[in-house]
Length: 415
Image 1 (cartoon, helix red, strand yellow):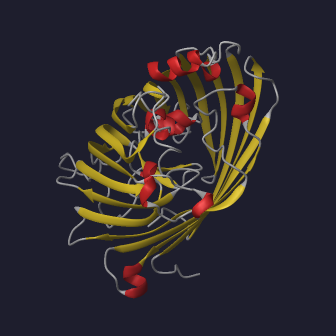
Image 2: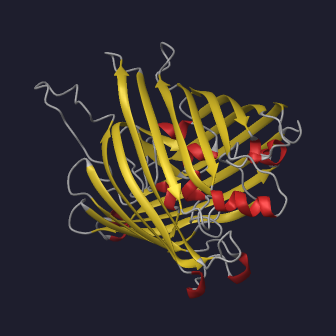
């Protein structure tokens, strides 16, 4: 069958099974899943509109809450969401004159490009996908999985390895009471930015180049409008995005909500929710045949504690791609994330007679194995210290297993 020009369709299904072994609220197991249906259209071959793309992404989630059994704050599974069908993304993007500047608008996941650490995306805990200081900011959090909203994003790339992002999005996304994608001036907007350096892993050195010269290609080039779709990529399960592996990345970002929010201290005036974050990832070792790579990553983020519960988060980890000979796409990893309650929040709880611990820490060990290019099986173990910062809960040990199937039409990489 001939390949439809400019059309890419993907269908993916991910299923998680988690079983608390000890600690937490109870030892009830949780089963949850997510179905992704994604259509990406390049309008140049379809309608003659150069450098213009459309994406439509629909999701369906189901299952029980594993975090309800564990009692943790950070989220054991990045698939956990209300049982529903949802329009997750629907945006149009255009590049102006060259691949160096692009604009995107529509229903958009902020975390598809902002606050992304490629290596951290191998883990199942939600904190590794989106820093909890950012994801828990504002009234209900930013426009991201599972509740997205209207947004616009400008991306600028002054060089092949540097980039800048500016975004504006609905201040209270997914508000069913007024219509999921409607806007209300009283709820304000979320403004976000990120400045970064990213060097793709696949293009760090062009081995096929007989001159031995370094060959670099910056993310977002070659006609890409939205999240990076070029080079050495992998699917971000449950988030509808692809992430390009990097040999090095450093990024500094920040966010602020325009609408003010009631603070924790009753007599205090309304405050503004804002935050800053710094992230980095680096390739440390790679086998000479290119089949194995050891990388490390770290992130620190802070948020205004007068209106937000989490005022500081710190995480990091190590991932190794190709740990077993003959299986270059398998990934093993160990990571840690710690979130801290702000002092005003703790004082508010203390005044109400509620005892709270200062911080929650999660340690995750995971291994993902790929079979046939379309199936990934991922056993996972997570240990949570001070689940939910609740002193009445014992530290939790949880075993997990994820299975993910992805079907693409036409086959091969996304456009």
